[in-house]
Image 1: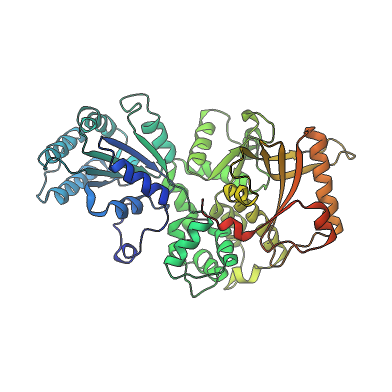
Image 2: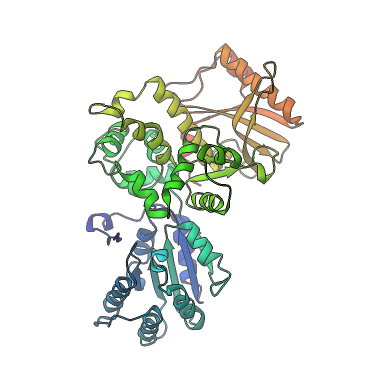
Length: 492
């Protein structure tokens, strides 16, 4: 049985870093003067529990934590313990959830009138085990009592985002339109990651933070294990490749904790990890061998809502032509390095050994592209078009013959001011040099794009680089905009 541990003394000593938008929104809801029902979802390890506990601290009146795979009786015993802790008396173990919510109602009605009462149900989906009748009892509690009490602020959280969206936010039964605010907690961006690491005494240059982010992403739990006395590469080695490392077994645990029948989800993840340009739904079906029924749609929905994959419509294509891409950094890193490595005999300091090899350069180039795609707002701001209506998409032209040159653009910014930025992303340790061969490739991509799309918009070739562009005539002739890595660290 998996349980969620209480906050450790060490972790609680750290300030609550980042999440400024979420904290401001929670404060507004807390002070609204009316009943509030908040549904907060986000992937495992993202900090949902930590946010609510640290932000509200002593303002939480009642807190209940769902346990994975617990029996109904075990969940009810945990409820009795939670009610006992809140009321300061020993509460009897209820026989049903209906009785449990009746006991909770009685306790809350005995409290003094006036102060805001924050009720926190953590890992809500785990409470609703099959045949437990939890949801009907919860619906009755909210609809018949809590929704009429202006002092009540009810917060539920869940890692199974698709379950939360399906059974609570989008419920067509007793909870239909009852949620007053839905919130999704996302991984930190680069700015938040830098602030978070610095609050933990990790004071690195931006290049080190980017290298770490490309492997682990912005998941707070992963970042908590980073040691400032080591380099990014050393941390990756110890966390991911040391058998005792905190993330050595994380990949399987992550998906197993979120999805029923997760092995089929992993087939989708593996198929997307094997290609850089993404796959259509039909291509996914072909690569995975899964059936095209509702099960596939549900798995895609679950992976999307969990923030592991993303769907984008190619330039000027319909939504049915969407391309799915794996966007979770750790999952990409696992398939590129951790999974293959488990089958090979290698010594210590594996990551330090492979860093700088051609294979590493290929991986880092793709990882940097994904990082840029996730920081679209920062790119728009760096280009001075933050206030212009834009659409971010990708574009791909497959050659129809030997004489028909194919082309692919991983990121284009289609702008309402009759312009399009065609973006190229390059990760290098030194300023990137545009040589004659690469200049010809850029011109070919631009020309094929213009010919195939027949766009009349002005095309701007844009370079996003980790260490800037070297100055030469080819750069001056071709490149309209150059964005360096530091621009990606801007706050939203």
